[in-house]
Image (tube, rainbow, N blue to C red; front, side, top):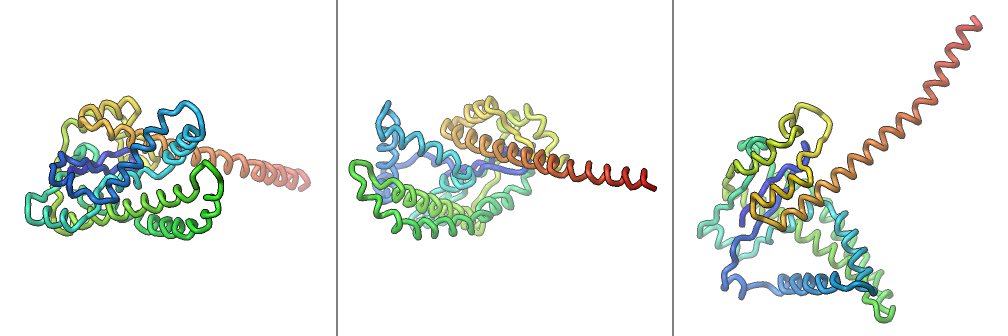
Length: 278
């Protein structure tokens, strides 16, 4: 496994785990859970090829919902759970895990603390959401009576419970690596070149306003440089989510300003009227 810390904005960073070559022994030891995930992925891919029908509609709505799942959760899910076998291998063998990062944006001394923060900051949220999914599952059982179409609300809650559990497990794995001093910071000059094209990266910390560090073109350059094509989807999702949040914040500020302006204008008129009466 190799970890990547990829700054997305001046305030937020994506943590992503790349699984290195899997041996035949590892494949034979794959858990039923991993096999189930692989089966679900194949089924979903098959539905995506449908041009119409309820499978196509499920895929369209599902992809829309998946895009709104926080990118931090997707990042932690990329970290494999810490099984007993993996724990033994990382402790007894060459268990050091390389952490690739752009030193021009993230100082090397902050790598471990940043990884710790990303691994723990959303743990309470994931636990709460997972529990609510368990609470909601029995409520969705009557939907199974609908003919032909599967019980989609139930399966969605199952997926969200699993997704939150994987995020928690991924965070626990990162914490375990940190506590056992198994993380090895590895500055990447290739990533530094990517961020050198971003003016916001150069001014990181100089302004309180959050700014996007990567454009969609730079994301493609980044993933091509790292030779991790699957990372492009994660970064695109992260940039889109942050852009949407920034738009909402800006819209809220404009509404607040528009609301306060009439009141201020009324006060100014009252003051002018009082002055005239005097």
